[in-house]
Image 1: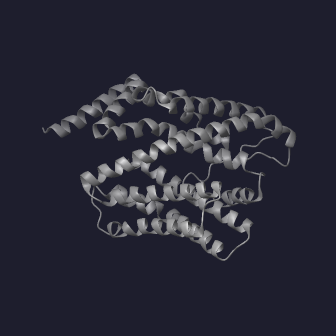
Image 2: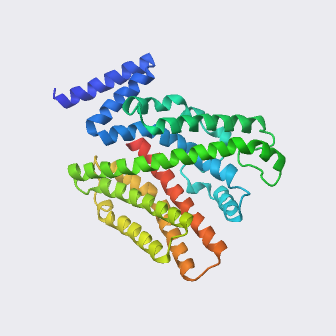
Length: 326
């Protein structure tokens, strides 16, 4: 028997033994070791993955369901649109807090990170996030009759909202801090993974898939920063949209090639993100066209939030299938 089948058999046996023993921490350490065989960047990405999964589970529902609903007309329209088009999200746009699994956001999700990077500032940010989420959920559940799981009734019951607001605001701030730190750390890791992919396999279908998702993320971040700082121009928007379109088209020849065992998961993942990706690109074009035609500020605000929601939709489909395949 060759060494490769022996290694696979040995790994399977070890995982089986850990499963029988219920040894969660040793399993996490062993997974880190396997990831480390690939690269340091892969091991670090594996350590951050539980935090990203947690934020992905809770952040959009909380922000849409509590903070933005009733705060301004554009976001209220975005929330109503989300409810009417739940199929745009791979998880059907979960906005009922009671339906979300709490186990995704427990202190044990930090085990990998503590083991690999004990001095990482992400640890403190994640601890504050976990505590803030717990306190906000306790406050919400204490008023469950007044605050349905789907949204905060900001206009219907101001007194209740005023009592709950401090816990909600603390969660939202902890979430914003953790998201910013994760985004900064994760984009570097994705670039390193892309470099390793090209080094080992060339610019194959996996490389182009990752390249498109990186470009999609950089695009929405560039727009968000430009809107916050009031520095975004129609020319910058057109260039960002064009770069994203080029990243999509660059992968087309590889998507049209026959599949094999190695490329089949990437082909399938491309097929899963096609509809939300094209919707994202259309939303960018609509924003640019309306801006060029000097549409009303309210219309441009709605267009911008449609771009953000389209990106969230794209990411939800990518994450759901990528977690299965990779």
